[in-house]
Image (cartoon, rainbow, N blue to C red):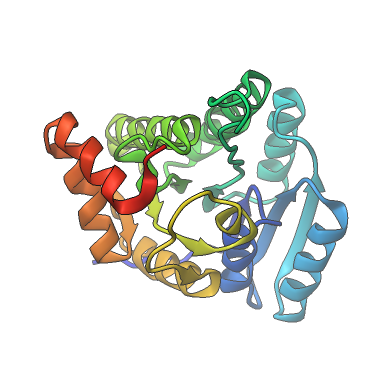
Length: 257
């Protein structure tokens, strides 16, 4: 089996826990990293750590909801150095408003703009250059929450389910063009976003461990990467069991309202 070893890696959301860990996992002499983040100071810190490992680093701080700016940045990056691997990783989560008992509509709209629309715009902007070269790899960071909607985070679950379905469809669409698409479905990873998650966090992995596993498995261009196994299997089960039974199981696990 051919191992895919990228020389230019683009990462959106590189200031987050998983994004930053992925940047450091790929940082090495001869590797170009193209990193995005919202916080300039945090992005600079990630870039400094990666440069210390020998990578050439280019950064851009921007709001991914500005999709015109996002697409322009990706086009600029692809013109400077062909992107071999792109992690579509930028994302946010929200919580149910305790007073209203549901999520804030303004926050829902922003979540969809970041987690779904910006993600699809990123892929669409990457594709022309990858398809022209007949080579490239895209990793969409979904979540095990994409298997079954959690009552404590319905919009986040929906956004990750959307990425899962989109990635699966795009993989089939691009299969004969040399562009691989992988859906990455982590469980709980020790990040600030995970810490704010309002529920149990079983089998949480350090971000560095998650990044190492993602990098190793991506080398064989799989359709899906999901972990850790016990939580992965349990999440998958909720997607295939009758919905009424799955809802009871989710509540028993501590994710009910």
